Length: 425
Image: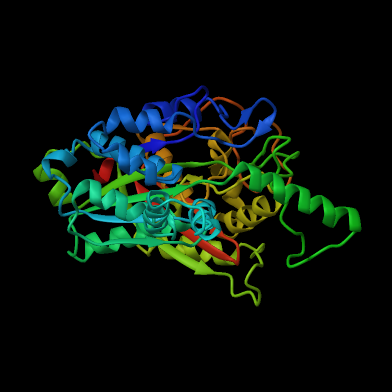
């Protein structure tokens, strides 16, 4: 596993031990000078350190998301003990999850706005190259595959904040079917802070005029930059965006054993459902679709009683607290209050596509350590919670080897991952 996430200073969080140190203490790297947005700083320097052989002309065409994705990929290869320079990932499939479009927009807009009457030939060529590299959602994947010299599958999946979780399920099926032995999965996104502020100003116009748009019983809380997100907290009323990338390397048991790999855990199941709502933007607040996704991920081979922990998708919005509370109650019934559900989104911000990978990585670390990380920024649990959200800034001791991880996309889409620990390694 490898990362490129917001850090406390001017360097990104890149390695598993740094992620653990952040999550285990409920630390948040989202705020800087009163502005709440998980910004990755120092990605270019990290890129140069990890990949010094990369030609400078490539950097001129890369957007920030390319740097994030390449940094997390290089760190994941190092963590896995795989040397991409020696061709050890040449046969790998390279799958990428994307949700945001800000970097695509930047590349396309620069090309579109260029004035043919005044632009130089060299600058025009540069814009075309950048458009080819960064103009679509399949921007980071080809760059990663090129670094590895990969001959395997290479494509992008986009289904909002569930994107990398869904890709982990696809990677598992590719390996289980014998199609692949080695799959690299990355979730990467960047949300432009100026556009976040622009959205905030537009929202103020709507509020000033008293216009409301209701596509849910309770509409989702707006993203904010002036106060922190507080998942599962009684005072939670917003979420903060964040940027970054998380890469996980999945391989078959035979492939891992043959090369003596250090294994973190296993993806045992994944399922995606939709709530069946007659709206493209509604949210299934009843949690029935999420509960069904969890049952399908368990697949009849893992008893729910063996799952004492869920890595939740709580982002500070009471609406999502209600979804997960309803789903957990539907699954565990009267025992739901004993289930630990924590979210680490407030550590780095609501980053979109990386969230599924981040939740999976952290859950496997928790199994290894025998400790559950707290929900960052949760001090007083919401009365809506039907579960224990692990408030505070300390880990909770728990010996477990099975867990679920939840992610969502606006429109009622739910993803549930079943993860296994040391007993399946």
